[in-house]
Image (cartoon, rainbow, N blue to C red; front, side, top):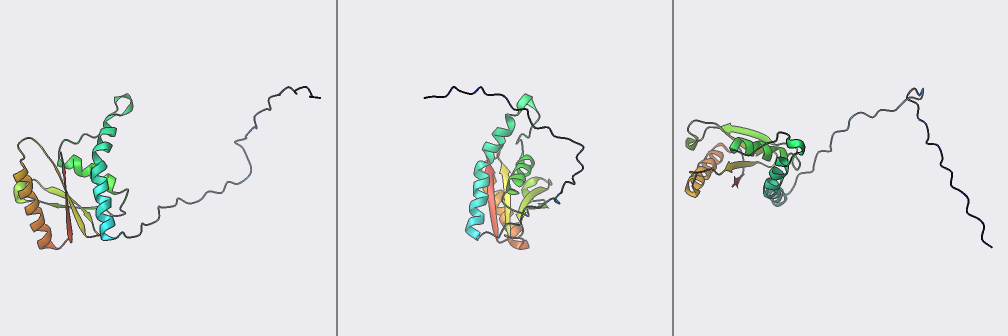
Amino acid sequence: MATPAQPITPQPAPRFSMTSTQPIAVQPAQHAPVAQPHSELETRLLIRKVCLRLHAVARQLRLRTDSRPTIEIGDDRDLVDLLRALLRLEFDEVGTDEWTPPYSGGTPKTTLLLNRERIAIVAKKTRPGLTDKDIAEQVTADTGFYLAHKKCTTLFCFVYD
């Protein structure tokens, strides 16, 4: 024989006091562990992955709630800023090197450096009037500079169109 269902009575929510006399253990802030060095191939693949996803990140940043201000990639400096931030997700040390190449008309250019990996990353943003030949000449000048100064063993060039 079935027993009649018991009515469900709501239980009161537990009460919390903000004036507790119990000490609260506070742990010091923990820094993220230092990443283990990657192989040369893994490092190149990580850089490539970041570069391939940069446009998706840039598009997402333009879709901000309530039309909040965002970063627009209008020139090389904007590109380098965003690329540097994204590289920090994968690499502990992302430095910069400023130099004035002959093609820049006296304007310093920033190159990103992965010092531990000895990789320089040159980022270039296309613009009207900048031809493929111009970009190739710029990359040749960048390569010559970094070979002569032995700041890196690899030059990674990223062209954003």
